[in-house]
Image 1 (cartoon, rainbow over the protein chains, first blue to last red):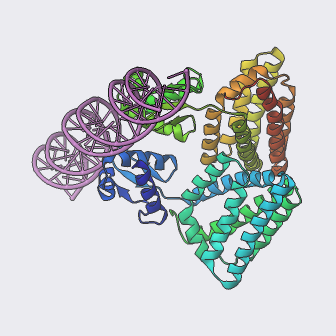
Image 2: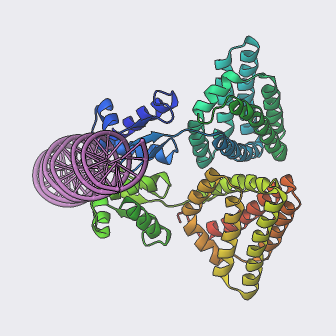
Image 3: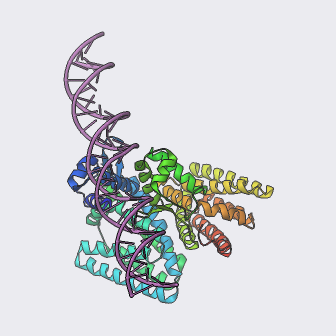
Length: 217
Length: 217
DNA sequence: TGATGCCATCTTGCATGCAAGCTGACATAC
DNA sequence: GTATGTCAGCTTGCATGCAAGATGGCATCA
């Protein structure tokens, strides 16, 4: 039941049914979900650990808003973790490496196609799959979990930047460079390409967010 | 009160008063801490998020044990996060960078002195301060939090390896190389030196743990 | 003697009563 | 008109009753 509350609240936050800055009482949430306060309270604690809400003692729960500063922090974590993941992938034995590069290449081709067709949602999903594969295939549960948490936190921001993004071309080219480095087993290059790719994306997207005056997402 | 329970339990786990594999009921813990089940339950949830315990539904809480495989994961996270932190430090403005390098140098000198005097605990504490400074001064709260969690998880393992460690010399030299790269503003080199330093330490310590048959720490 | 089924016991999960704390508004005094 | 003090209402934090689930032992049967 606490899992149910956790999932429902998280989904509600992710698709902005509970917008950032929204203020609700646990009582009210419990009523809406048809359960008692206890499981809601525990779910809220977990969401606080995830950085999605803040519980203000005796003043209800507050849906967290992200400032551009938070996005900078988030990009640093991504650069760090994905960079190391790319290194690990490049150090994989040949067979496993070939499998991973094939999967990454498939997702990059899906991006290229979606980009040419102007299908932004499909492009975003393929991009997300590429980066998820990159981390998950490194076989480090802790790194996967960190990225999952970070992705949840920045989900709304990604939905916004996806629409505001100018050109999609460079990402595909950069993905191909990453794949090539992994394929050839060059860990340093793989790390560097992921590093540069994510920082370029950050430097492209953060100014857009800031120029739109999105002080809290 | 939940914070009190959380702190008490965490401390108990860290200094092995609750050894890994230990199995207790929340009721019992509550009794021992002189409070009701509710705050203990919430504290246990937070500890589970931290990866220190697992709550087995209706079968009590289990203090988590670390396998060498976990240590490999943990080192990957450290390599990733500390590497990026070093990059960030190297990109700091001159004044702040000078301040950080001075602090890092102080702690490294404390290590060198403790190493010469054979004072292992002092050496370990100075080493921990160096790495904590490295991350905290990068000014990224999320990265700091990740490292804090990882450090809690691996605290017992560190206490063991500290005693089993052969030579302390190379760490000091490597720390100096890291400091020099940060001082000169060379982000790539700073990242690389941290990267190599942590991987060398991992390759030195993991075999020791495994040779001692420490399947679970 | 071994295996299987049942039951007692223990443990958590949820609901709710109660108390304490915070906020905001209203009234009063200056 | 402004500022301050007080109070009512709302919200969470903790304790505990109750129920459901899991386990281990014991008894019974083959």
